[in-house]
Length: 131
Image 1 (tube, helix red, strand yellow):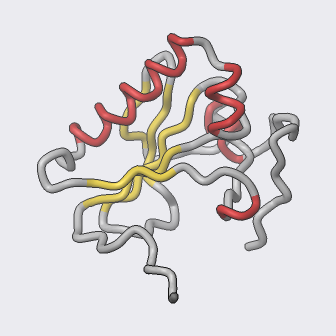
Image 2 (tube, one colour; image 1 turned 135 degrees about the vertical axis):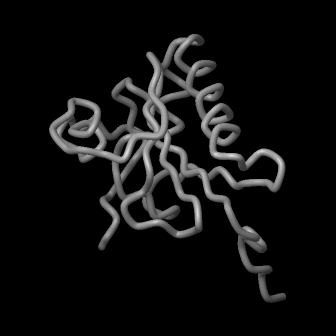
């Protein structure tokens, strides 16, 4: 799948898959939901545990979210990420959170989201650069 061309000034597409999940038009395997966030299992997991956490507001990226969301939305979302990891039993063994932003990162869905990976040894985050 080719990642869309995302830029900092991209407008929110209300027809993206996460917007449809939030509206209940597409089902998800829900892990957590509150007023600020929805968490669900990724349909193409990249680790033993791979959950996505999305804010309920219409934000394209972390840049958009941190610049335009209310303090309550930002705090509520980050608390949701931590709560989901704890509820999945990942706090003690460890987990990784990842948020892609834009074309160079490989962001595929233009709705801000955080991946939580765990349930196994994840190794290095990225391979060392050859020098």
